[in-house]
Image 1 (cartoon, one colour):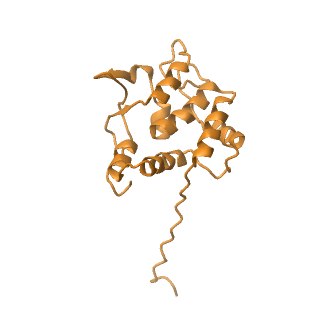
Image 2 (cartoon, helix red, strand yellow; image 1 turned 135 degrees about the horizontal axis):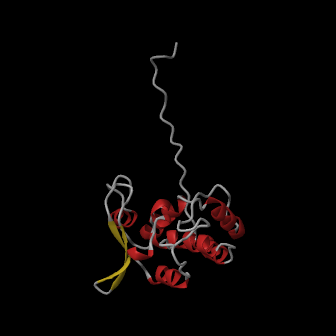
Image 3 (cartoon, rainbow, N blue to C red; image 1 turned 120 degrees about the vertical axis):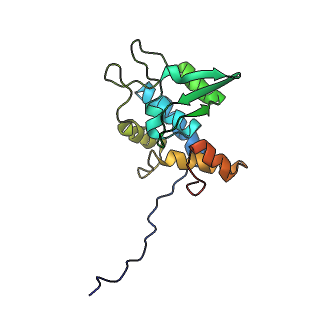
Length: 172
């Protein structure tokens, strides 16, 4: 009897942002993690706003100096385009603290020789637990936090769109 009746559209989107205290705790917990590279990866995501896959694919050869600024060139994004991410001093500090592994081109190397971290979720769960952040907080919520920080510090939706590499302002 209900075959021709449209269902109500449900708004089930999950939006979660970290506050300043939670960000500090997350950084501390990441510093204390048993996997130096996984901890650095989580902090790097928060400092750059890049997608999970972009962070995992980061290679040392893509870290460049352009016009006196340190830039990370991402050759392939979700949209199939390339883009440059200007690295802030804290992101540069993280990169400088990471030892390079001979024969591994990735910034965040994994356990498998010559490859990046394959699945950062276990480490992320350890880090948020140690930081006292509820377990429902997702790795993708770091991007929401970056967008929130931009807006709360006087940025515009255009700034959010450019930082998060959204194809259109509707996503932002």
